[in-house]
Length: 593
Ligand SMILES: Nc1ncnc2c1ncn2[C@@H]1O[C@H](COP(=O)(O)OP(=O)(O)OP(=O)(O)O)[C@@H](O)[C@H]1O
Image 1 (cartoon, rainbow, N blue to C red):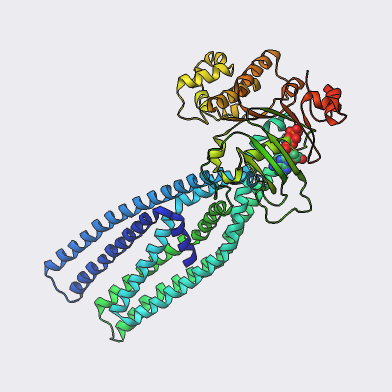
Image 2: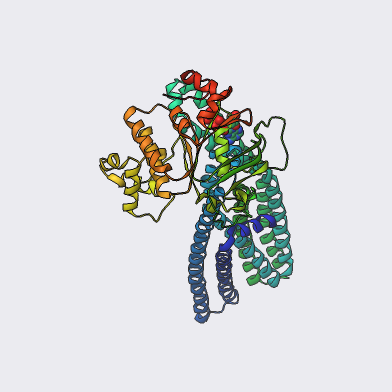
């Protein structure tokens, strides 16, 4: 139990002080409660000795009043501090996780699916938020109070005190056994809870496909089994604690009877006064009442500890930014120097410890090339050859396994991610827009931009007109993922975002999906504005774009198999010429028009 309590204090982080304050108030509340005991003693002794002096009644009432007011005030503050601790420490943790995720290699998101992370940030931390501080204060407060009462019993009559102490120790032993038993099961339950959230998310996200293929019935199978697993593990956890709960009950019941019986016995044999006897009978009920409350809460401790372990597990993932510095590169030249890269099947891309597992496929094998500053480089190659991966490595979504990638002569691993990304704008094929206003989506990489700057960017990206025509214009809130806009509109908004950011390097994944002619023309104009005077690396699908590039890199089978201008490559026999001649019938990549 000590380890679990320590974990909660550590989890509280900068809010540890608040937690301690809350405990202090709970402890004071216990002391005020014990005052009732003194008041009662005064009354009982007056009754037993037939003392009719009303002063005793007034003193007793006065003590009772102090006890009551003291309890109300201390309980109020203890509850307030608990609530604040719960919300604040979890808010801190959520922000910390959010920050950390920015610096974790993308491979982590493969291993730990989005559902898993969502479960941690919502349900797992929700449990901690609502109950960690309350449970801790109730458990520790309860134990403090019962120990304090045992001490009082020892002072009044050591024999009764000893019996109570044995009862408390036996109860604590049973509670510790219960905690140990639930430790393993709590972890399993935590895992099934995460799987449940994961299945629900997947079910909702895949609803469109499910409907399109009429698979509604089959698609619920995974969610059904996740619900059943969650139910099974919750039951297992509860059932596992039943014998220990019963044991705790036996201890409480036996000692609750034993203590008053002992007081009566000692009074009958003349070794205890009547007043002491009555007080000891009352106190014996109080000892086990507090202990029982604390013990019931203690069974939640292990579940909370498991939740905290899960939330902390994100901290164990190595981040990419630890050695980075704020670098302003001398130029926007990009160099791949003997780069090797493969996705790790059992780890993330940045994990370079284990070498290649048997199922790891090398995506890049000793790849070297230079993209001079201010030029356009088109990457072409069959589907799955690694074009996107190559672009993502420049932005350090993953780290290379061997060799190095430099920007302006500096290894990208020497940059802080923020300072690297100041130099790069990425325009993806699948645009993601946040459930926020159009203006905020455009300002995403540049939050300090003015409205005028946003309009200037949208005019260049050919999207000002359609945005202005929307009922709320730039304040229009778009659905999550940009669901309420067409593909072409989303693409142009993402280009406006990149224009506003004005980074010297543009990584562009050209749209393959057929855009209608009107959109197509506007899209090309937007791209021309974006890429003006920049260093561009693009995954090109259209022959027109490829032709205009200063350099074409043909990627196949983990190597750059050809490089040069269109005119040079078309002269050579090879993959590029084959692809150009195959045109529309191209096997994996399309050169439209
Ligand atoms: N996150 C990932 N984890 C594991 N393997 C991946 C991951 N992303 C891509 N791959 C694999 O790496 C290979 C290269 O993928 P990549 O997306 O870079 O190719 P591409 O040339 O851009 O393909 P396309 O033209 O179809 O978009 C593919 O076999 C792909 O399945």
